[in-house]
Length: 380
Image (cartoon, rainbow, N blue to C red; front, side):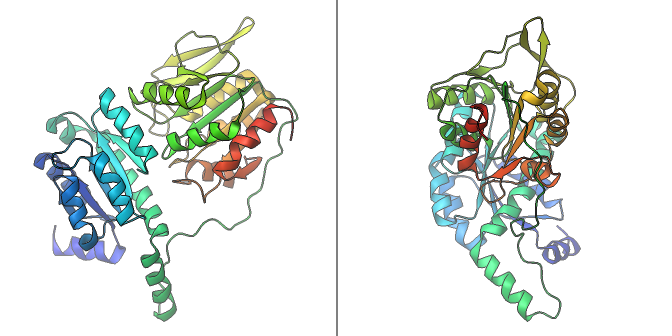
């Protein structure tokens, strides 16, 4: 990196990243990608979890890219130790798309990892994958912002700088305090529950259904930004956690009350009415909002089929996927609930819906399930 680039990164207070992977080639590739972005600085690399822990205090990363399979100390073992040593640090698990790694990644999310990223299997695929590069850059910037909000040392330093500097320095992003206009909820009793989620979504889904405390008398359709394999594992985990029937949506399947359908990885899931039933349609149309599955096509279809009898829920996630679909549900007379900023890992998707005035309620994660249960039960 040139002196000019280093100076620019310092001026912009670049996001500090540690890359942990047992492959020197992969560490080098990812580090070079990140260093080419003026908003990111690689402060350390490590070949296993033990080395990452030893370097954590001196290098002070805000985001850690953590491989799963490593010698001496693997990613799942290192994760809770990293969180204990630096609670504000945001950990992104990196793994290849195997069933075993999908299982481990979901365990890591439950244990406190902020997100995951599917890693190509070979160094050649890593170096040529524009999608992997784009994802990792986006996730670092979104979660780096979260880390800064949660870092008490950085927050105190920013407040002191703002008080003492001739030109006040920007403090970490504060939680939204501007008033949010709420949409009018539908008077119709819902006949479907549609959920959209991304970063932090798996953990949020488990808590949402824990708060629901009921077998919904309506079908539940979910678009969670996840790759193949991960969505089938998520369905299995939700089935075990909730006791409800839950699986990936299948082409032509008829929706049934009380059953959960998850959009399969790398496919959009929509629904359509035919005869006296509503059926799932699976396609590989182009990604929307850089995502497939995406929330928008599912929510648009829900609006077309159910109109005012649609209940949509937008949970934590970066970006604005779900904004257009939520707008379609509200325009059709339906109701949208959104997760609040304080309990979201990233308040991108629910924030976009909330600030657009589409949500009838903006609630902490612990309250959204109960609120949905009341609405499904005909209570407001």
